[in-house]
Image (tube, rainbow, N blue to C red; front, side, top):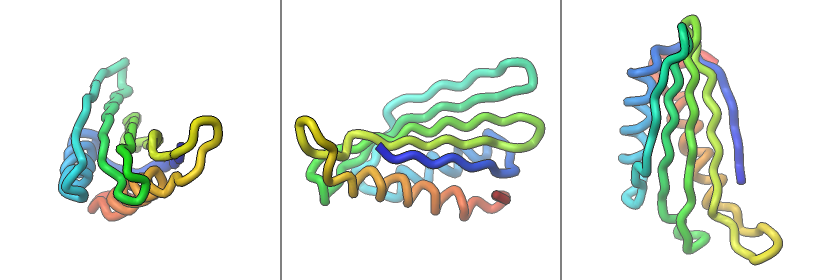
Length: 115
C-alpha cells in the first residue's frame, strides 16, 4: 500500500473531472470502478476508485482517491493497493507506487493547483 495526502486550492467538480480524465487517459488498462459524492453542510466530498494493470507486477492495482472541499480548498487523500506479491510478506509494490506517483504528478499539474 502506498499513500499520499495534499491540499490544493481548487473547485471540486472541475478538479475531479480533471483527475478522472487524466487517470483514464494515462493508462490503456485504467478503469473507473465506482465513486460516491455527498454534501454535509458546507463540506463536499468526492470518492473515486480506479484500477489498472501493472506490467511490472503482472497484476492489477487499485487507487482510491478521496477529495474533501471546504472553504475553497481541497484536501486530497490517495491510497493504492493490490500490487504486491507474496502470501505473507509484501514485496514488488512497484505497481502501487507508480500508480500513486502518476496521480500525484497529475494533481500537481492541475491548472489551479497550489499546494
